[in-house]
Length: 525
Ligand SMILES: *[C@@H]1O[C@H](CO)[C@@H](O)[C@H](O)[C@H]1NC(C)=O
Image (cartoon, rainbow, N blue to C red; front, side):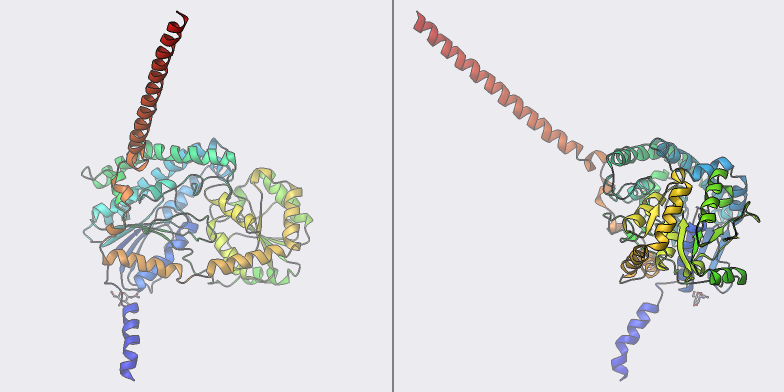
């Protein structure tokens, strides 16, 4: 009996036993709940497995029971920045970029990121970590911007990159992952899943532009920052980021466009447990329970505040809501909505999963952010997507292509088309069926995202890096990668051959003519 059980006991022991109690530094930089909520489960789980985890973040868990977790809370910095954010910038965020604006938006975004990263590194508590004598066995860094990868040099330990969504081309370049501009365009581009000719031109130009801009502007600027913060002895930031062992992406191969990935690019496919629900406030619960005709839930996420939207747009929403035979739950961040229709309920902050889980909620009007998409798919609620920045256009187009949503750009919203879209989704059953279908596909996976992430993180700790997974493309010059030298030789030889054949042909014609002409001359004579 005992002998029979032994392999199981051993197996359980092997599964349960943490690699060793490692010291891990987890640095997140983007102060948005949609980014942070994808990371929180990971730092929580790592600490529960006995690792000593130090986190630099804007949204700490503040869970006293997690005794192995130290959270450095930069939330105050976020609040300051939000208050200072000009209304113009908000307008800019709700505008889908045009062809040319795609390029300028990248310049603005990278300079904002740069400023933000510098301020994080200068923060008093972060300075204590940098100057302190604590040791770390691993640094995990949010992989949207290179600056914080410098921590891995400071602590002389392996580095893992992680994102809460896909990754921009320049981040994929740090491990040498191929990014074909047509097959896997940059996830921030305002284009859909099937690329039109215009999109293909945009994607190709953008893939060249971001790399040139990154190497000539972004990296030198960040290099100055890390030299100032960590000291002049630091290697070039562009070389530091290329020592990354793995990158973990919150991509799902069903939802996201398929792309080729190297063995050190791990697609987690969802990390959060979206099944967790917080209780609804009594008043809100009563509103949802009593909405027998169905509820349209309207929220633009945590970064875009509805109350900061342009007034003419708010007016259009109100007109539409007045005309539909359904109730509306609107995430509205001030106390009063001017001209609030009777069927509209406003609330400053909503437990989104609990709202989506309510059986009367039939439609989600959203901006197309990935975390909201994950939630709405899991609760089988079709969407109307109004995308404006980063990966939102691609996400909304995915909802359209899978048949569980309708997309309308902010600039194209009219009372008529928005009302028609709401009526279509509320009355046509196919949207609901399609969202159930994609949910089944997305959740059919051998390993949960969180388990996959932890396994790979501990893998890097166990082997002190993952050099053996490094792509050979990282160690050859770019002209060799692009086959320029090979092409040059092949084309030179071809050109030489063509030249020789041409010369020979010319010579033979010449010879032939000479002989022929001589003959005819002799004939005439
Ligand atoms: C903290 O880590 C230790 C091992 O270092 C582990 O035994 C303990 O369960 C962890 N505690 C919590 C609350 O995660």
